[in-house]
Image (cartoon, rainbow, N blue to C red; front, side, top):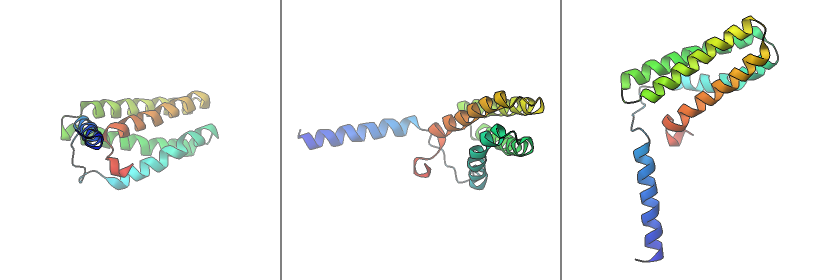
Length: 134
């Protein structure tokens, strides 16, 4: 087998392994507008908290909470994506904690939890966001 053929074979093998690891969901019914809103909101969430802008942070939290609920329901209905459901629940719990911290004016803890919420979003995207949308 030539060197080029070996490289192609290895490349196709890697592609097949990645494709089999990623869920084969059809996302036509996912609310893309909601996802764009979530991605925009998560960018401002921690800065709003760090600036101690409680009203804006609560608005951001409400958008994110709705998104985590929607995503949990979406993947519950799809089936076969329990990890996405758990990720969404973890995100919802973080948003609840953040709201509590904001209510206590503990913006340092709220900001730390907001960073965790961003990581939760990213962890789901790493698995479920279609590659062409990245």
